[in-house]
Length: 312
Ligand SMILES: Cc1cc2nc3c(=O)[nH]c(=O)nc-3n(C[C@H](O)[C@H](O)[C@H](O)COP(=O)(O)O)c2cc1C
View 1: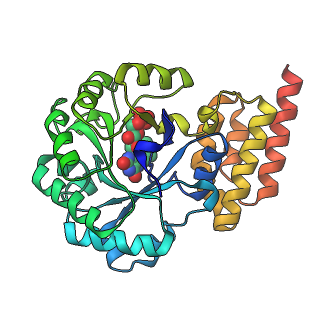
View 2: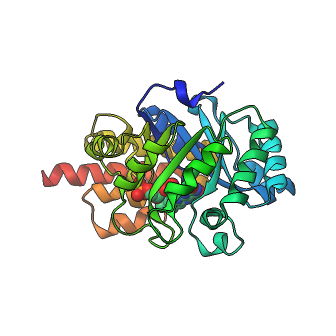
View 3: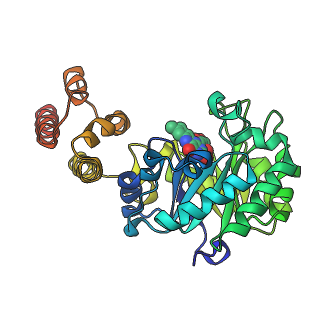
């Protein structure tokens, strides 16, 4: 069974990202060395109500493990019930509770980051979910709802409630995803806790990983946007153009395996990120957004490679 305290440090993990950190992307990041994969949040209410579409999001490939399934909600009993159901369906290696999502549709229901405003409720959720399962239960949260030092009182409450790990995004809910992540406050919080801490926010390169670890003294990091179109951030290598194209095709093949040809439509949002690092013309960009079968993507990428060779 996963034991956060015993994992090799530093823990370099893929952060949960709705619509991105599914099985194919998890496999890609794992291939490049991500030690732990956090699966995107699923609604505890939807799970408890038997929503088939949400069940599908739980898929885990054993090659991705350890995989942590994140849930969101605010009713301790429903969250505990959902956790039990998830464990029966996909047996994740850990459960993570979302206490950081800033999206209006989430916080208006007092889910996600809103839980930072009610530490007693947040603690009860941790306790109930812990009681429901034997696997580790963690919390992912932010510096605060409004002020950047709220975490200094919130994190010890979460630890006392029994959380096995806490991941801290170095921004407040008010900041959303903008501005620099504040790693100093993460460092201050780390000093107050005995449980392992993962630092998150603003890690876009391998260098950033080291800088963040030094600045926070955290047990590891969670990489989010820095992994999009860039799964090799988990390794020490930077692929050549030829290698990048192979990586994209591997990702595409996994998408098709998981979702059929529709997987290529779902891949488009990843292609935008992969192509940030590749010089290309507008025509190719337009064609990329029309790809609907794998051979089209293969041809397009071959075309791009020839074009690049002709330029250089
Ligand atoms: C598209 C997208 C989806 C996200 N979905 C989730 C989610 O499901 N659960 C969660 O805890 N955080 C989610 N996040 C937040 C990230 O995990 C991370 O905390 C945030 O992006 C800050 O890290 P970064 O600066 O390295 O991107 C999401 C972020 C993005 C960009």
